[in-house]
Length: 429
Image 1 (tube, rainbow, N blue to C red):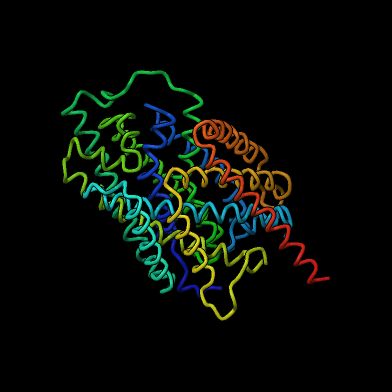
Image 2: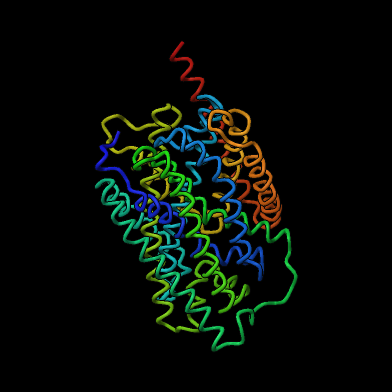
């Protein structure tokens, strides 16, 4: 157990949580969400926050009763036992987090290259992504305190920066332009598209789950994990609404779709010119780097717990810092070989499937133990399916390869867990 003087404060925990959330989700996904939801993409981000908020109930209840560095892995183990189901869905969560790290890394490369017109480079974007992952891993090797200190500083900088930029954009457009909705098509919302877009928006909030991985590293964990999750979700929800309204006012859904992976930088240009693009790029770089720092810290702790549970592979014992090194290596591979759209879609499939398993486990097996009401996990499952099914249908129609890859990854995880559990049972026998 970590010495109390080295434990993470509530402010530090919120910084780590928002550090993971306010990154690729808002900088890279706006254009993709607009492609699904059209003019209603700000509403999709609100709905994503609502789904995440309802889902958070089960994680809060469990973490308040049983705070541990394994977080979700421990929840699944308690719900289903130390077998194939718990191991598989724990790895679903782990892989979705690793994929989210690659999303952060590629977003870093995309925005950093935007001022030079190289944001679509098939070589430079992944190269910069790999470099920033490696740098974040080295910083994490220094220890908790540096990660927390950097997370707190950068969290304040990017929250203030995004808020000021968004508010200035909204006010400037309202005063100088034709109104906030001048670029709107005026069409009624496509419900299926709106729900599919909401699926991607959940990725912009799912970083709250990394807070559960802080376990007893956070001071007064029984109370502060819940506080940290709710504060982080509230901060992110407010910022996402501001920034999406600003994008809507500046370039509209069509402009966001055209810009795709760098919609926020494109939205800053009409009103603020090159200075606006530069400021947006600077904020994006800070957000993605700090997000990587926070995510590598939290996700490597999850992998360490899976190793302790003998449900994840390990390197030879002489290799130090295995969870961090393995996590960084997998994120580098995803960054090198997948584009932003594929990364986001795979993350959404794995995360929501895992979340359904978590909610079912809480409802059927843990409800009395953690003093949870039944209807909250039931509602979460309904909401997860309500957005995941339309998203899957649209992806099958437009991007079948990504669906196949996600299914193959899921199948490989299940097969690997069957082999692992049988080998573990044989050793015990």
